Amino acid sequence: MNGNSTDVYVHCEEYREGSLTGDMCEDLCVHGRVSYQRCLYYENGKKVIEARWNGSPVVLKSKLENFSSYEPLGLLEYQEPGEELSPLDMVFYATLEIRNSLGLEVGNSSLENLLSQGLGGAAAGRGAVGRIVGGGAGGAGVRSYSQAELASLWSLLQQEEYTILRVLQDLTPHVAMVTGSCGHFYALEYLWAGHAWDQNIFPLEEVSVAGESPLSGGLGSGGRWRAREMIHRIALSFLDMVWHFDHDFTHRLHLCDIKPENFAIRKDLTVVAIDVDMAFFEPKMKDLLDQNCSSQDDCNFFDCASRCDLRKKRCSRRRRNSNLQVICEKIFRPWFSPTLLGAKAGLPLQVELQKAVQECSETDRGEEEEEQRGERRSLDVQQHLHGILTRLLKEGGVTEEGGATERTGYAHTSLNF
Image (cartoon, rainbow, N blue to C red):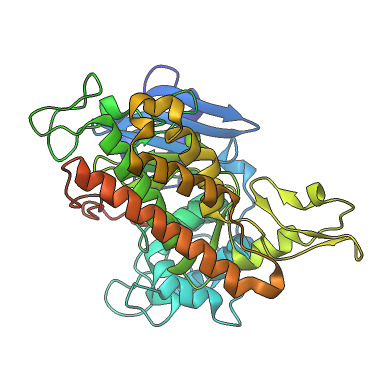
């Protein structure tokens, strides 16, 4: 690296000493194939850096300042120099750490079901944990792990965002792909992030679709999509993401910090969650909401809210609002406001869309005793929105092809060095 890159490659010395490793380390510390571009975020030790790896843009992230800031794997203290840990032991300890990070219990199979779901594995060792640690347990490719590999993996597993992205990237197209790591730094695919100050939220003029030239001037020609049509397709991808997070895993995934900056789009306009520090599965969500209260405001955990039982002075463990409701309130309402639509705001389908978005932003999951009715109501609202957006796309002459992410290319595991 060159330029202002000291904060990234300062641990290259530790790599050369054999203290840490990763599939990016050689390119970063030996061949100079990772180049610093700019700092995107820095606060309390958390770093987000734009870089180029082998000529392609990536985003580098770490939760804490230095490799030494992470808790060491206690098992290493009892190992003799040069002694290695077996794959079965590594999968076991990684499973425990992931359980703690995601708030899931191993005993009731919640974690195993989540990690093996959609991966063809009957147990965590053959599912996502096996992929995270590289090789997994059993079969061809079994190997032991060096202390540098174990220490590096352990620093990554202590970063909740890394863990949830690695677990989910094989199960859904709606989370950012981890593409590599070196020590406690991990690389994510580079995407077009949202911004609250942009009326389109995403930089549509920079995104080329299906091999066409990027949008220019708001109107497309020669196969380009008009900005409004792109927004409708992105909105459909938001709905698809909500469906995935609500139904595709053993537990519902709650997003408690919904704002444009925490989402991005790929070239095919798939919406991707890029900052999941405040994403929690249902069991952990219930624990976070289970608090004392004296008013309804006491039961708001960022964008996730429950109800205060004023008699018991205790917040309900069940979330009252939903991912869909907050996305309608904070993303869809600004997008589909009459102010931005201008002359088109009075068209019948646009009016219907505005009403549907308003209804969506006001539809919560209902009281605990009417849970099924509330879930049904939310599903109806989601299907209504999907239908309107699909009709708007057809009116614009856009087919429903695309919007699916191709999951091809290099498959990263944190110990695939």
